[in-house]
Length: 161
Image 1 (cartoon, rainbow, N blue to C red):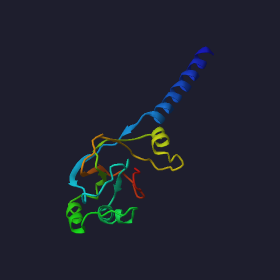
Image 2 (cartoon, helix red, strand yellow; image 1 turned 180 degrees about the vertical axis):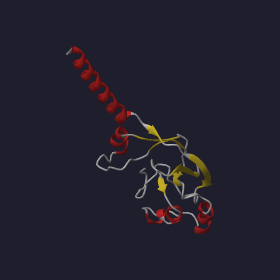
Image 3 (spheres, rainbow, N blue to C red; image 1 turned 90 degrees about the vertical axis):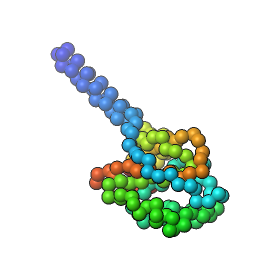
Image 4 (tube, rainbow, N blue to C red; image 1 turned 135 degrees about the vertical axis):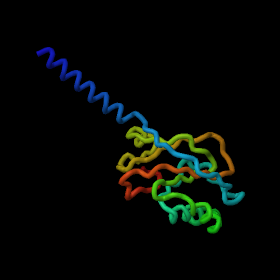
């Protein structure tokens, strides 16, 4: 009887420990630096933004480089479309998704249920956000990184993996 009780208690403690580990332990997402480009113009400033643009295809990439900031308040000038097409034409959208980061370097991308609840704040959204860690230096550059596409990823949105 004592062996059976010990086995049950050990199993429960082990399962609870695994659940806690799953919830709190941040999983890293590997990424690679692709390119560094100058910001679109001298007045462009997006250094205060603590996120990034998650890109799955060429059309979306062109949109974020050229038109996205024209619709913001106050409107800002993006890149010339010819310049943007030259940047994105050689990227591999079949195997990689891309991340555009403004005026600071990306140090780390992580995800976990705990980070979803504490760092992203959209606990009601069932998608998994990639939480960035930034370098503290503000630059005059825009950085492009790539991450491997997640298998079976049909409906991904900005910053979700």
